[in-house]
Length: 272
Ligand SMILES: Nc1ncnc2c1ncn2[C@@H]1O[C@H](COP(=O)(O)OP(=O)(O)OP(=O)(O)O)[C@@H](O)[C@H]1O
Image 1 (cartoon, rainbow, N blue to C red):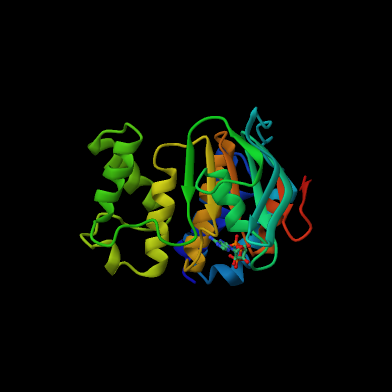
Image 2 (image 1 turned 120 degrees about the horizontal axis):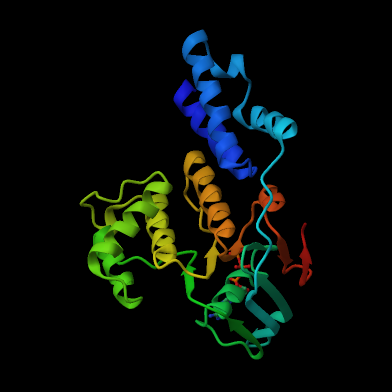
């Protein structure tokens, strides 16, 4: 790993660990100067960027997190049956502005079904979902149009949300860049790689600055760097006051979320 790559991951880690922006910039600049003047492999000088970021957090602490705001998504008593199979039974989830909720559980326990119900795409047999504000939804699969360019996707989604062509294109490209993807490529969606198509999906769901963001395993096909960028982006969106619900199988991410809904047991729990 070269110094630039190490510094990029180190900066992202500091951001994720909520080190105040000014302090993080200062620490990264110091590390960069040290590497430039002293040379050498950053892994030998500082160790893994994650571990060095943890040491920095121990010594300087983190910025206070904004307090969660009003309830943005409230799902109560959600029950869903397919034939004789009850997929969801009396499921509840409340997410406030400035919170991330993770929906976890075994394959087939109903995570995607629950998210689709929250998005208003599937009707529950019982229960109610109340969403306050604008909604963004990133499905697990599909969602892109094979014969459109990325820019055309942004314009289309923008039109549905009352955003003009130019701003929609710019917002889409900016959000894509945060995932490490240059969306200016003249490539039809059907020729994008699976991971890049998922970035397009994700970018579309965040385009109109939604108050509630529903993400169904949004990282599928992502490489390690894109995955780090994704969590960076989610934490930034949360700290801006969005309410985020993310379906995930990656339980090692749960220390970053505020609420966990385990559909294997059906119990939502405060995580912090
Ligand atoms: N439209 C449908 N008609 C009939 N059964 C369905 C339908 N949609 C989902 N199911 C069933 O409901 C159950 C839950 O599916 P769902 O996709 O919500 O699970 P999941 O927890 O998201 O799974 P995974 O972890 O594999 O993504 C499964 O048994 C699935 O076969």
